[in-house]
Length: 295
Image 1: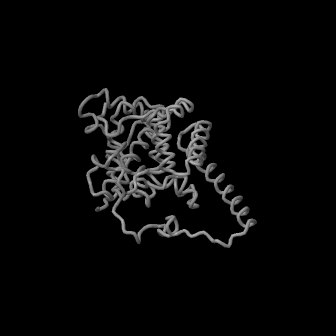
Image 2: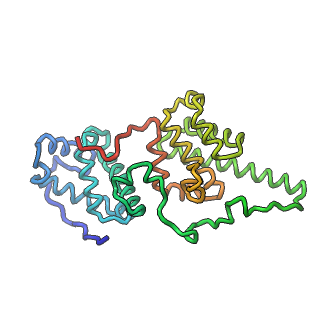
Image 3: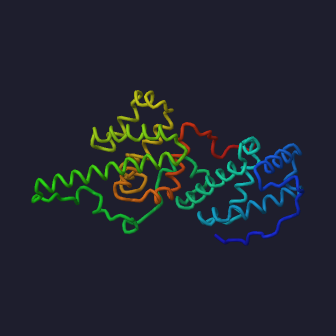
């Protein structure tokens, strides 16, 4: 995609309309909304606001391989929503909306489909086309068919292996709790939910079996006081998509298996799909429908 040059000039703005602050942006958005149709097109402060937004979201656009003005367009759509005018922090609201839009724009390019289709869960669940040679982890490193136990292992070595396995498992659990907590989940709820999932996983010995049992377990929902949508999203994020087609992908492995393979938590936080799934599933987070019409 051809990249255009981001404007570097800003039209003069009144001192009482400093849209760089949250209060100033809220006041400007309310004034433009009350002015009615055409206000955005003819208002010089609105033009300055869009130039500022184009510069502000350049790094976000570059990260997702987009033109800065595509991010500015997404910001424009977010600013016209009622939620932006009523948010406690309008800039945070706009930034979150722009990030989600950029993620779906990049997702659509990877899936070779429209952004509208990429926003649909049954479409975005597919992974981008890839070759076996493109995968970061060789098949022999994680597929059980290639794992052959050593028959000469002594009892002492077995005890050491068991202790090391227990240590690694404990670290995986703590890393998973920290990851979920950092994505808008309350710390106590994140710990209870992750530990509950890990307990079920140890009991069943299979991620797929644990996923199916927990997904239908109403007792777990009542115990954790979680809505069904949040619980299902967290299960899929931690245990992975159980469909065999995703077994060798990040979506299929899930957070717990990726941590067990010693993938650093910092790398998981760079997975936009994972971050979006967990943060939007947080039960205390106010969510809105993606792609909604401006208020």
